[in-house]
Amino acid sequence: MNRLVSWVAGIAFSTTMVCAGGYANPVHWSYSGKSAPEYWGDLSSEYALCKTGKNQSPIHIRTHDAYDIDLEPLVFSYYAKSTHVSQDHGLKVTIDPGNFMVIDDIKFKLKSLNFHAPSETVIDGRSYPLEIHFMHVANNGERAILTVLFEYGQSNELLDRIFNKVPALPNIETPLVLTPKEIMELIPKNRDYFRYNGSLTTPPCSEGVRWIVLKQPMTLSKSQMRRFKELIPYNNNRPLQPIHARTILE
Image (tube, rainbow, N blue to C red; front, side, top):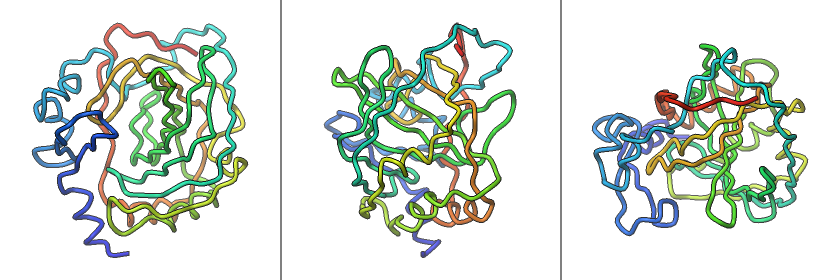
């Protein structure tokens, strides 16, 4: 892997495509320079919520402030085997149709796994080396993000398989076949979670996103994290956003 090529790809201006953001005119954004997160809201009127929104993500979750309401158990139905790995403001695994999660009696279809390092979510002052967002979208366009945090410990073999498929350049997809069982290996067995109303953590920072933050972290080895940073040698975590009047549930 050519580190220089990966580095240039990571910090160069990036494009929000029509299919991702729903906008006819692509607007460049990134994680550094004049298109970094602190400037997103000024790059385009379509990104105004990045600057003015009151329900933005990520946030600092303080457990003593969470309300215990006995949240409903999470229901997963992951069946599809075909996926594609790419660089898209970081590492992204696009999931083919056939997988979904049920929340509030709504079926949210799994669209992608988006990797952020270091973590965007912070819990009780603790940041994690890696965070994966399981991006789900319902038929009505509503979104739900299931987020899994990773701490240092035992290696995760599935991460090795994914990392080995990352292409050298952005906008290129490499096929990867995952069984439903393998996809579930990225989700902890303990499904206790925090929930809050948030947003996308990338432009256009759309709000009204159901955030499901699993409490139990998964593990990866330090050597795996080094490998990830060789592939994505820049930080792609948006800074923490104010909670304002929101309530965190557990």
